[in-house]
Image (cartoon, rainbow, N blue to C red; front, side):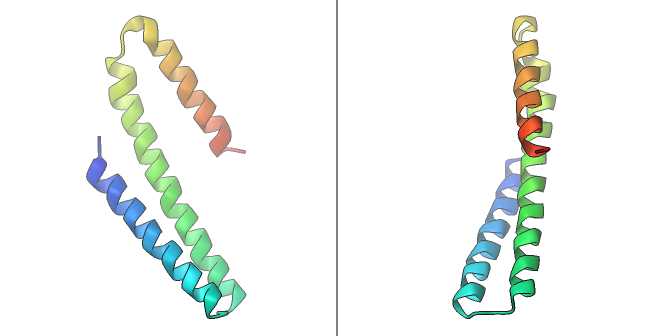
Length: 84
């Protein structure tokens, strides 16, 4: 798994969320807060896609034939949530 990349992205988003909280506490301009929230969402989406990519390339490809369909269904379920 690309753990280092995922951890870096999650730690970055954690720092951004802490910054957003501070911005709200300091009553910063709403649009600036919104832009930071959108940037954080983007980073979290990238982390999620990295995890899903890893799942496809490792968990699905290495699964027993009888489990591959189940693994693909799991990905489909996640993608349905992502695309809502």
